[in-house]
Length: 530
Ligand code: NAP
Image (cartoon, rainbow, N blue to C red):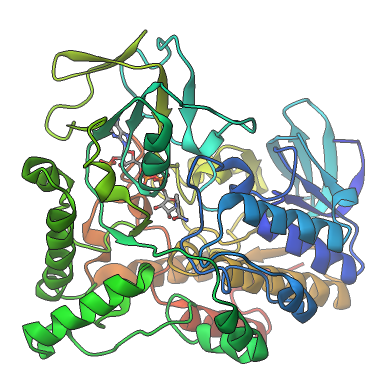
């Protein structure tokens, strides 16, 4: 980073950082975005593993701040593949001339607040520094890769990949023996594609996952036109649903209908495909018996698809459906019918070691040519605690969050003045369509900075009381339902030693937006200005 002074420094040039830069420029702020990667795109820059694609429909997974942009851009598939989303991000960067204010290939290592000047100094890994009045972490919820702790981790002699750090050049598995560790969304998307080329695929599964078919297809032109003819209304309707996604969310209970009606509803949703499966009944995440009906339906589908009954049973999840993020797949379960795809259950007997030529489990060394970790992320907090963020009184965010994060609205933290997080812990973020959620956060932050400019304020900080009250509300939002009963990355349960605290806000997008609006209407209630 060059030794310059800015009004606002934004870390991350994904969809959040790009839109924030655009908004800040229009408000007359001198802003700089700092990005570790070599290009824009954030999650879509890094997660370029075979089969990577979005699990929200393309017509909804896009910006809406500029009607010309949303009218002109043409998606080609119902669920966009990663290369097309990256192309879209690049198009946005060109269209709004964003790159001239983005510094690529620069990873921020530390940020220190100076109370006397009310400014932050950011230091990159290369030692360069910038100072800034405001500092925004737009680093995403799922951006710090999680590496498991397995004996011999570094001993494998062949190429090792992580789905979240996939190389930019083409990786050819033709004729290769490949091990995949993990069976989350990234594995479920990539395994069928890898199996197309590989000679042998060994999948090491600790916990099976529920997956609903994507039924991906070329985007229906009539549907595209129908949406574009009323895009603003379509977007507004989506924002009225708990996840901020346009779709059919039924209110009634699963057990209020006959089993035949219920099965017909699940069949319709299975045939339609995607995450809307969980919208079948309003109580699926609140009533164990209701949840059992949906979970049992998917397990029966797995048993229908997978030829070998033993393999099918191994692939059947036993936890509740929807406790972990539901997966959306293309040919995942059917891939296990291929003779060269092998499922190794490591639930009761974990992987023993990574060896120079493979993976050892159940006393056997599975020899492979390539090793893939599809082991997910240090979610929600990982990218924030990876930076030495020091606020007032030298408070270190990483230490502050040692027992779990806490935040006011997922936007700001007490003792960290002039620091904002986009879709931080305590916001609905990962329970919603990330693009509109990002826009809502960015608009809130940009409007707040404009307000401060108008009022000649130089510092803003969440009050400890407001933060504590909001965090209690975040915890209350999951207290009644089944959501927090599963060991998931929402709870930090996937990372060894991480505090188990439920991190996203489960109260729904509309309630969250209303609260943010009320805070503003009440002269930024819960924030102190200086
Ligand atoms: P993930 O859901 O956290 O899955 C990680 C997998 O690695 C799990 O199956 C986990 O098993 C396994 N694992 C970790 N350590 C292991 C070990 N020592 N031995 C064996 N297995 C181990 O990560 P992800 O698949 O990257 O997905 C994370 C999130 O990213 C998703 O939930 C979703 O929100 C998002 N995502 C979305 C899409 C999409 O469809 N657009 C695609 C990819 C990712 P356990 O479950 O037993 O811990």
